[in-house]
Amino acid sequence: MAIKEKFSADPTLVGFVENLLIPHLYSYTCFSEKGTLPFGELAHNAEGVLNYYMELFKVTEPVIALRFLYLLAFDKVRGHLVCPCGKGAIIRKCHAPLLKTIQRYQTPKEFEFELNYCYKYFKERGNK
Image 1 (cartoon, rainbow, N blue to C red):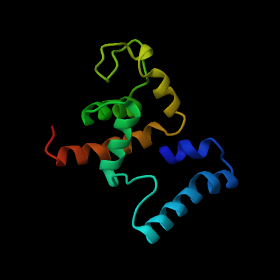
Image 2 (image 1 turned 180 degrees about the vertical axis):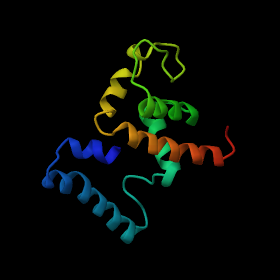
Image 3 (image 1 turned 45 degrees about the vertical axis):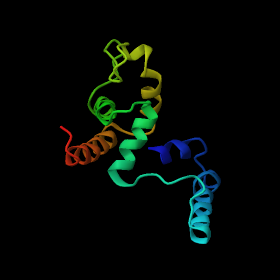
Image 4 (image 1 turned 60 degrees about the vertical axis):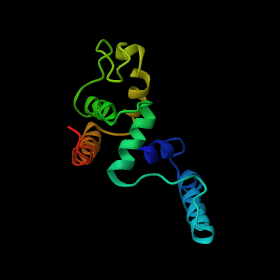
């Protein structure tokens, strides 16, 4: 989703090259020449996706990020419900603006795929 979000800011070939391709090639060159990544290392696979959503939603528990993904995959964001983040506020006064924004970048089916992918990883780690 992060790539889609970044590309949507300038959805042109020039935007793709400047905002995605050049940073990728720069990182690859730094790693090849110096053995370090200039922007830091991110986790890969489901762990990386789950970490991305935990950071995006500003939560520390993977299960909370999974709840947000479930909401995006299967439910409409209903502002009167309690927010999954655990603060006790209703969604409208908490995470609704962020949820509405990221719904522009992916379909519910894409969120469902990420939910299933991350949930499988979460479950394999021994979490229920």
